[in-house]
Image (cartoon, rainbow, N blue to C red; front, side, top):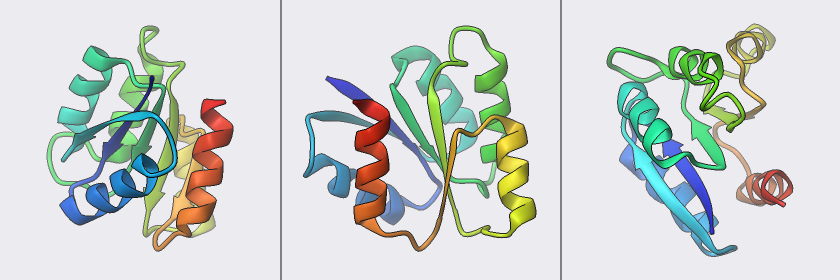
Length: 122
């Protein structure tokens, strides 16, 4: 069973993404409400995919958490897609520089998200 970790400080977003993805595949959905907890869960559970918000309170925002995971040899192969309201070209470039493998701007199409997740996890 493939594991997907959703890291977002908004519970409703985590629920929406979890329900959307839970309906289409045999995925184990993991959740974290901030970057610091997300890094810990990722190291412990080793998900196949992380869906990461950029703007979160706490020790690490999404960019910081992505950098930490991509710099760690144990977690650097985890595919990370940023899910964020920040959609400017400069924002996407910052995500890429942090190590993000993909970028979705909120609000996003559930169908496009499903297609991307399925293509990554196949």
